[in-house]
Length: 244
Image 1 (tube, one colour):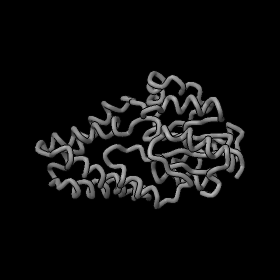
Image 2 (tube, helix red, strand yellow):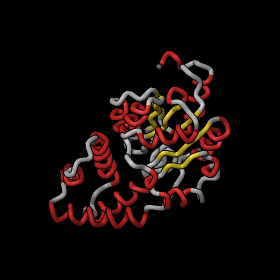
Image 3 (tube, helix red, strand yellow):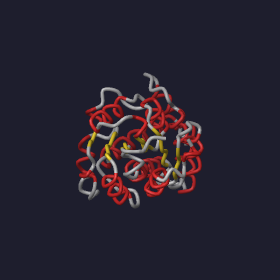
Image 4 (cartoon, helix red, strand yellow):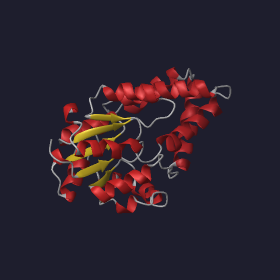
């Protein structure tokens, strides 16, 4: 294996908590529609919905209606409740869009990465979200290249953003690792020729997410982004060569 010289990061779900940005709106929108829903029921529903979302690889014209129908069935919502849920959820997601909460030790991971490797952020998040994130992450400013939604001609699982980042950093795929938390991240990394590291990072639905991620055969899978420096140090010492 060639020496790792560069790290490409996804943002939501890897460095920033997706539970805060999307889980909070989901919880409160569902409580509006089903006030008697318990936290355990909501977590179970969220776990099932997460699996539905992760398995939907094709984003066709009917993707959104298809997922909405599946979600409403999982939540046992009637059509009126489903409509209310979608409206509440849309409003709360918009209000909460720039509510950035770093994952535990994510800033320390960025510090380690930016000091030892060439780094890039390749994310579907919009630029204003990243601008908000600068206030929460001390070391995000040290990332060499930021590629946000507005920079992407094609989104993941297309490798466009990863290839752009490697070109800007002067990296070859075989010396680069992409760190993401969704199947389309793993697919994009494989199509770009990089090593892939899947991050679970999903409190309350870890088991379901790990099972789905494993189906896409990432080179490595870690429970939390804070484990990344240890993985990289092992890779540097070639102690994980047998995994490749």
